[in-house]
Image 1 (cartoon, rainbow, N blue to C red):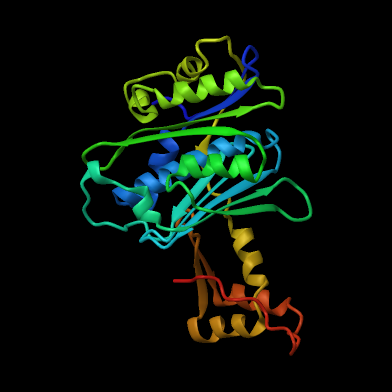
Image 2 (spheres, helix red, strand yellow; image 1 turned 30 degrees about the horizontal axis):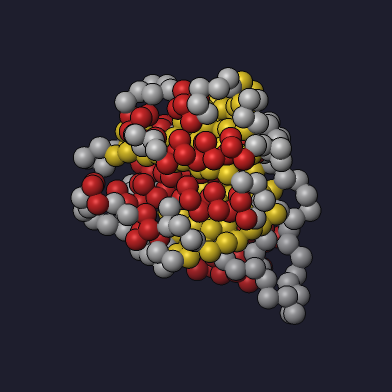
Length: 309
């Protein structure tokens, strides 16, 4: 099976840049992990692709990362996708089974998420992450990401995200294209690309399913002008959770909460929301964590408990 990849390109004749991502394996792995039903598979899969595309603007091989969160009034409630500058992607849907049975031809992201908000949080190593929140306007991941980039980042952008399902609900293709202007991009170049996107005779998802090269699709949108591939690197489904991070989270709890876990539960079991990996801490481990904590201040309400099962 071909490797999922994120590719950066530039078209000097039109003064445009483009990013492409093939996310078939990543989307399959993450949606399978959460046992999503068709509507959630499409919604989560497209959001994963959007996060991968946005990660192309992070400094390569750095510690930078970003979060894409879509929350709404629909049955899926929330979708989270995180990507970092090293090609690692993870994600989940708050309700991965918003439908028990659905006609594959009648899926609707707009109905699945409902009215709500798009949040993009970029951690680029500053003191605080940069966070932008906008209302959902289009009702599709690609359109709302393009609106975010144009309004919040002041970068005119076009986003195309494709994902197709088989009749059994399996993902047959998944990928995306992000096209952006430079300050000196000619208006006629922008208009030409917009016209080519609107007149595509086959959706990106169907093109990828038929075996099309996504870079060739971009070339077609650029009227076959010369493009230069700046770099191309693999992406993968990978969670950043580990036992040390979970232990640190437990250390941040109030002494009273830790004591309750020890006395009532005899330990703690924490499940990662992104990858469903479980971490068990027995009574002795919690007691060691408790022994190292300073006594709680009466005025300090402490932090909430983590989700546990």
